[in-house]
Length: 247
Image 1 (spheres, rainbow, N blue to C red):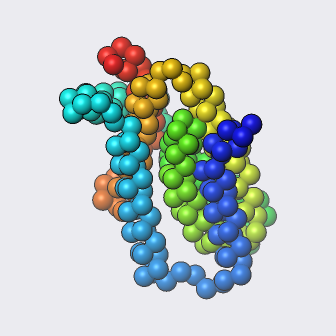
Image 2 (tube, one colour):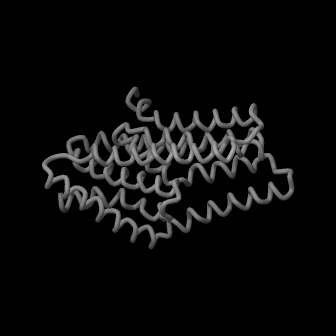
Image 3 (cartoon, rainbow, N blue to C red):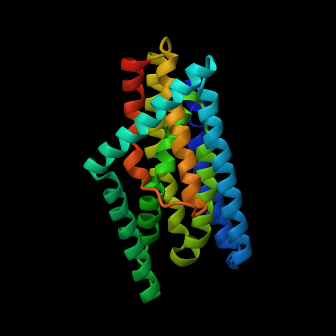
């Protein structure tokens, strides 16, 4: 039980970020300045780059040749995952959720009188559909690496700070589906990590791919490159398969 609780550190930090952002938004009515928003974006992007590459680097082991082989398998997993994700239309599904949230925000801005549940639905859609939440939950469950979810907690907290002024306190309730969704993924991955404890190489390959995808999230945050992140999520499944057949 203690181990399960420890594996939820990332999700709990994410939930705390949402609640803190909501409280600050209710107390501090003045929005962030453009300079402050820019600073936060750069800082979050930098931390995401660091924690993504750190996860990948810590997942590499052995000689230089073995590390190159591991990186090649990770890249191949990303390529196959991209193909599978596009066939399954993961990014299009993610875009539809984002579009739905945008419609709710637009309607609330137009009428000036949003429905009491609009804030909850908007934030729940945006926070749970974020690829960083899935990637962070997987790395937290497999290796206790909660840092990507900590970064997501800051992102969601800043978003909640803005949404709470539009929708009111109901946006803070989005912490509940985040806790349920990400917590379930984390605990599920923790169980898998225990079952494959004798096959650490498989887990390391999954983490190396997750780290590269977290790094890709940073490129999107910093607006350096547009990447269809949701389409790459199947890479997390291809990584252990390739490790089994080629590792």
